[in-house]
Figure 1 (tube, helix red, strand yellow):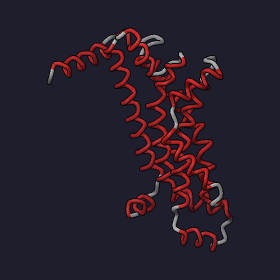
Figure 2: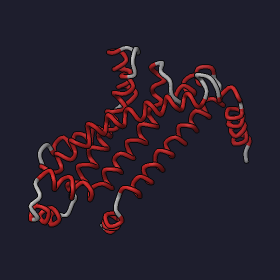
Figure 3: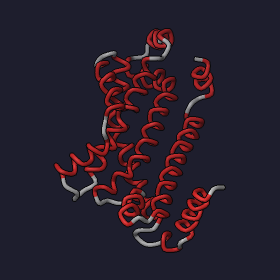
Figure 4: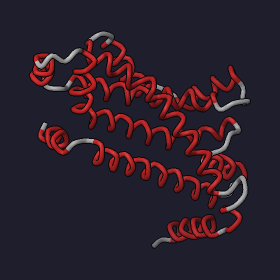
Length: 231
């Protein structure tokens, strides 16, 4: 281990070993809870917007241009710039200057994957469902959604990871979350705090990915999982 690596390890030991970092409003549990609340709220709002819209577009075939726009938006959206713009417009009296950019960041991944999941269902399976006398909503709910569920969950997982990683921008607006360690640490050149906050955000993102992988294993039927792998 080189001198630089050893120094960084010592920074992490200093940060996580300091009892002051585990209590109070600036402690790791409090900051972690704030980050979690930002992330869950943003993901829930994005899902409420994107999943019904993706189901409708995928099922009806209408509004496909919106999917193209969403896919391009996902690659071009400057999250930090959007945060600064919304803060200038709305101020910092609420969490909306943070939630709006996070939701905007998460919607494209959920929308595109939901659409692709529904559109990718075998047409013969769809026709068979109609042949059994099922109505449009029944076909969507009983046939298309279960088959498309792996891709829908993938969209939610990608969005969750993006939100968790990007929620650090909340610190720029004066709000809490794990990003406070990075912003405040850089302001006073407290590099153990900066590194510790960065590690916490990475671990949080990995935990979010693990939870969605477990959710997919529980929620998706083995037959659908095998079918997706084969395709």
